[in-house]
Length: 299
Image 1 (tube, one colour):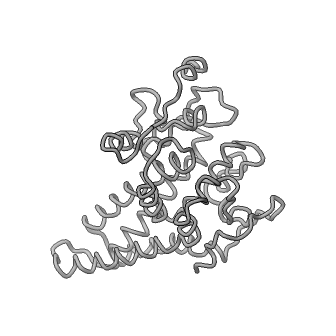
Image 2 (cartoon, helix red, strand yellow):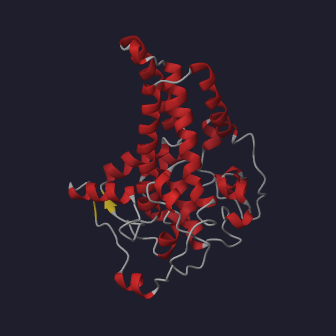
Image 3 (spheres, helix red, strand yellow):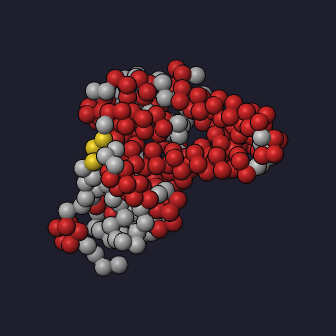
């Protein structure tokens, strides 16, 4: 299985076919099918609470670190913090931080052009999930992330990214079994905690995350005249902790804050700001006032 997720291979040439490689993405398909296990394991408040907590923690790792830090360098942090959140992000089953950042930087260079492989202009399903199932998308383009590739621990995590989700899944099963033995009144089990805490939580997390590709370039309002189809969408911002202010983001990708107005809630930024108060992160970048004033359009 690890061989299927090995991103150390040479970058696939642009002429490579865009057909879905079903054998290689079988674990991803299995992840969805495993959610059906809820029919047999049932539900408990304990399992749902763990699923929600893991959704929130991993969503922040994706939005705050995979996206704003690794992809855009919107703030600075220590090497230990960098690796810690890279591991948490890898637990989201959205591949390693180098792969994620390389593809996202490519997206910003070619947003909504023929070279943007997850633009909705290629169709909803292709932009939502089909793009990363193709041969063209399997490898990590290290030329796009030379600043990150210098860290051997990130390269190792990127190559064997599947190990983190496997460890998380095993830990959740063990945790559920322990709760079943010690606190039977919670009415949970190892299998139930695995299904809710890992499979369901991960699948929901994935599909909410990629709505920024498939929906935030289609539905919403445009404040800035960017050279792409990006939109601001309040509902997606709520679900993704601030990523839905996507037109704002494409106007100035380097900003640690994506909700530019006071009413544009950006939970990821609020957490990053709180982390900066205790020195865990620093140098949070903001959009220059000149860009805010000169290109603002009336809505």
